[in-house]
Length: 266
Image 1 (cartoon, rainbow, N blue to C red):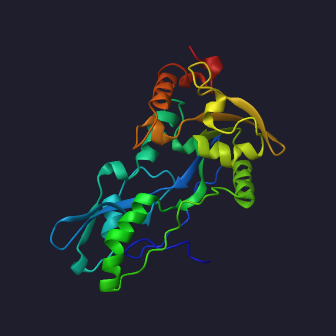
Image 2: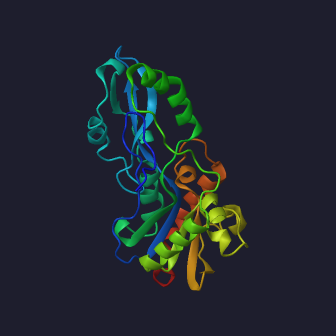
């Protein structure tokens, strides 16, 4: 199999997919896999890069556990310094947000869900590209380090082949509810089967419409779609929308507990 790419300091970019393939009640579709981030400290004990992606996350929607152990196993020449875990906010925040602000309010655990991303591997965003260009490549040339080949975030997040693969995963999971996280899964997956919705806002932007189930056909299969804001929005991770944050908080506090069990609510 052709390698997907290589991180700075040599770790391979790996596919990150659902490993528990038993049947699940709910399928969750995100955007692309995250990575393990390290703080790169130079030989002079000064920080070179605050958060450099150096390895694939060990499981899908990683929660940041064992970051120190993972980073410790990456060998780098002493001349270029050392790697230590980045600030916890860079390792596993989306996984924690998924558990705390989506699954828990729905009275679900990881054992109840099948997790999937449009792009099943880490991608290099502009901030990582800048860190590699400015800090890593000069060192790589000087000390003959491996050249990173992490794929950039693709313009097309899911082509027809990937859409078909995701649909096959949904069928394999046995789930009858699909949670789509934010605009991207709607645009690059759901829209291919029903163009009524092109982005999250098309489902409604108020307390009466957010976080409700919608019946759809994916191919020949009738399912319920639960559109929710991406973890970045609901946990205020970096740039985020106050509107989606507030709507999700209202949903968590007043509506989430009865979405999957309306008869037992109240």
